[in-house]
Length: 153
Picture 1 (cartoon, rainbow, N blue to C red):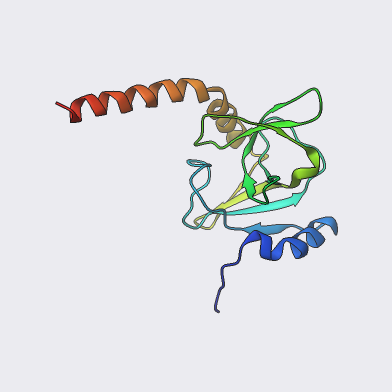
Picture 2 (cartoon, helix red, strand yellow):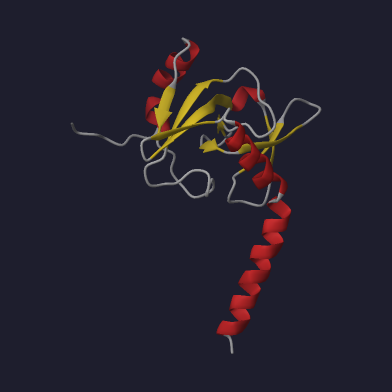
């Protein structure tokens, strides 16, 4: 069986039709912004239609510039917008509107295993990962400075 890679923008209309009809959509995310949760080399996510989001959910959304992004909900603002951040990023992307949300990840497929986002162990991992974002930035930043000082000697 041959496979062909396509961009989400190429299949957007079909994807929306499937989600709006109660189906799910599978795709392989690209990039490193969601490491270590999502890997660029074979992980697959399963999306369902967006109904509502909670903190720690993993939605696919469309930026105003047309870019598709799969990042985690860090905060829900009083005006109903969301602050998102990739698991491998430090800075929040603020003000994502509900009309930009396409779907929500319900499971991750890796090496033949299915990880449901409702799994209690996954939820614990996600909460700990999000809550240590600032601490991880300090530790990793300090480590990078230390490495740089060693190299410059």
